[in-house]
Length: 96
Image (tube, rainbow, N blue to C red):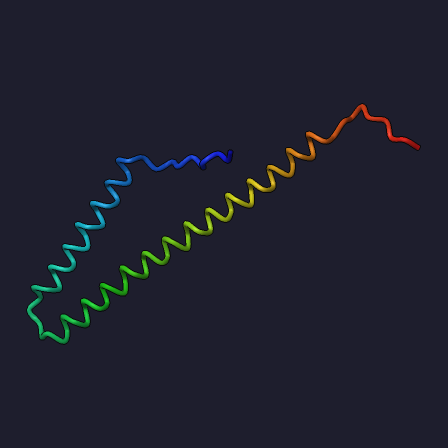
């Protein structure tokens, strides 16, 4: 059975991150919606906002994937080291 990696993120921190994301997205969305400009400018700004949000999610996923990959590689290296140490017997005499 493999041990689940310990997440340093608490539920409160996760809730704060979600709430701040929703509030900031809503605030900018409302700002774009009520901006006193032509519809084309408003649509351009809305597309820019959408691109920024999707880029942020993609970046977060890439960072998470790299962190998980580093964790897996370090776990494999640790398992190899533990196997070598378990198999090593300093008192074993080699047959000549």
